[in-house]
Length: 159
Image (cartoon, rainbow, N blue to C red; front, side, top):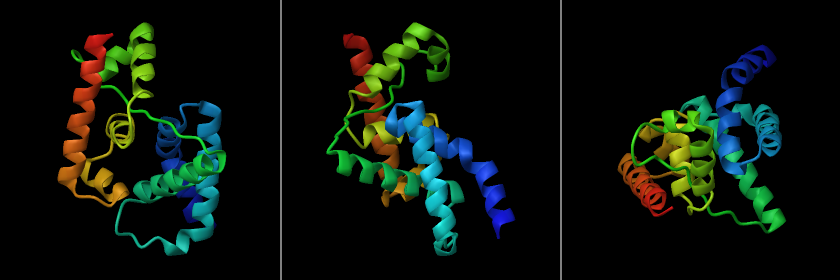
């Protein structure tokens, strides 16, 4: 069993870490969330039913852990990841100045827009997987992603 979980850890750590980074905005905090996620997952691996991808299940654990931290700290963050008005997000992220600007805008958007953009762009998740994480329909995930991109594009233009 531990060999199987070791393989899950090796395969999924980067996905969980990137997702945690999207939630926390801080590499150190993201590492803590990712580590705690795998600790909790190891204790509850027997509860994994297999009705979604293991990465989706792990990201759900990460999200719940992060939300519990926020509740404990009485901290609320409004944020989202920006989609550029022109060019691909990946191209804009290569430009340091543009990257800083995009991340700043990201943390100004409200939930669930930020999280949906992070999952789609950085987590490389399908709309079906995103919908599964939120307990919503795939159409909801598509519409939310579209609205988030529109909001980010408007903010890019207004800056």
